[in-house]
Length: 310
Ligand code: APR
Image (cartoon, rainbow, N blue to C red):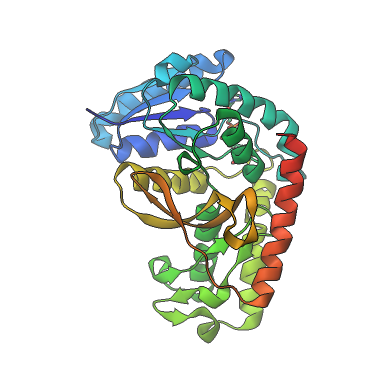
């Protein structure tokens, strides 16, 4: 039997998730949006069915506003919620998106209680926490997509700056999904060469700052809405690691219970994603300055989470 992927939210990111999941033949796809937008979701699903002959994929793709249609889903990816507009921080979305996540959590709990759930809605670290609390799902089954995107941005900027293949840039970004996130230049390599041996401190500092502000850079350019291609591909990478037991190690917002000194918060940390979901969190030995930066981002996440009152 084919796997089933439920996409909650059929907007900018949701529609690209649907296209990528189809092209990768990850399974059958359900695109769920609010009743007012059920027809656009159905329209997008039908458009993707009509793309299949040239896209060379077999998948059943449907649009709906009914949670019954996600029954038995193996993976749920949540993008339901408002995106940022120019001048907004991710935290400005807290109240409105918390309401939306509350509805989504109820629907997913009812209809797809076994699914591996990837949350994309911002403010990410608080929304994944809320979804976890509201569903009561096991911690290995709930994860936030942020570090995979932040690391992709870090790698992309390094490759662009140095004029090298992005395939050879390896590194990681820890912490919350906001301007205090922690890129780790010390542990970043380009074809095995340490980053700090082929880039100057000035270059590295500039790239780290650009990474922290990457989402905002896109929001400013768009004027309306936030990034969608790169978040979608990051979430699909996580879903694929689960569905195919690829055992990728990706930075994800995972529930830390003592790791990195964090108790009970979802923070971006390197995770192994396999058939059991979040199978392992890796604790990196950090230098003192890295530890201090991580403490700062943890403090910011804790404050936003507190505002959810969950
Ligand atoms: N249930 C299901 N879908 C909902 C609900 C709900 N209760 N409320 C809103 N939606 C849908 C909207 O109708 C819309 O189609 O979620 C979709 C969100 O799509 P966009 O507005 O295009 O936003 P997008 O760019 O996809 O970003 C979604 O991800 O990265 C984050 O900050 C971003 O929070 C935002 C989310």
